[in-house]
Length: 93
Image (cartoon, rainbow, N blue to C red; front, side, top):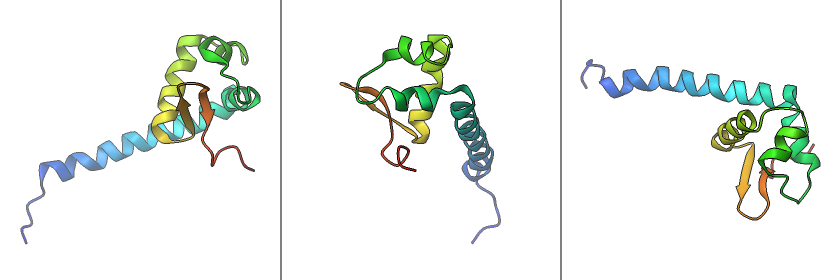
């Protein structure tokens, strides 16, 4: 076994830190901004990008960025028919 640290292994640590930081931002911003609540309150109907933004009073582009980040980390699911939905593990107490 070599003591040489592989470049890939060195890169993975800061990459994981960055992903963790982004996941923390998503987890913190959603409840503070009321975005999770707006999506949950929409029920089965697709409220669309404008509806997601209008419910808590934010810009549609900003909420779209948040939603896409949230898809990546798992709290939201995307369905072509119903749009953004809370992941099944998120809508239970």
